Image (cartoon, rainbow, N blue to C red; front, side, top):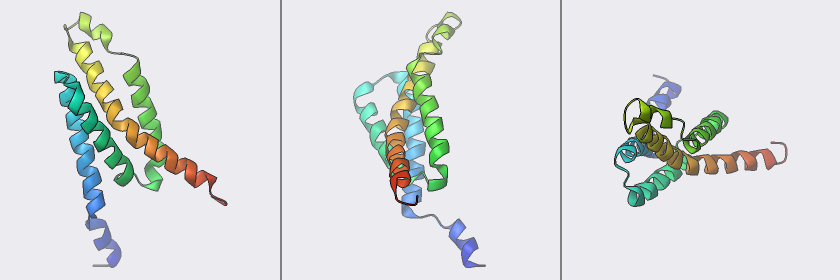
Length: 126
């Protein structure tokens, strides 16, 4: 097999760490939306978001990631599912809480990558 084929099959330690942080952060955000334990979970989401921002987003993925993160943060700030409480009591609040926690998780990663994009654009010839 060529070196190029084996490089794709191998995972770096940082790639595994970033993927694991993303998976754990998403699961934690969903669980936090149901149970609302704010203190420790929010801190954990921020830490996992930092790990994702540092290790999981490649240069090619930065702009699409930032667009998606902006959408999540905006949707998380408007309580868009509140009307579902009229259909199933509490369901809209739970969905809003889940989206809020996903936004908390994605915000540090978005900040890190926004800074990376600005630095890349500020480089001479970049």
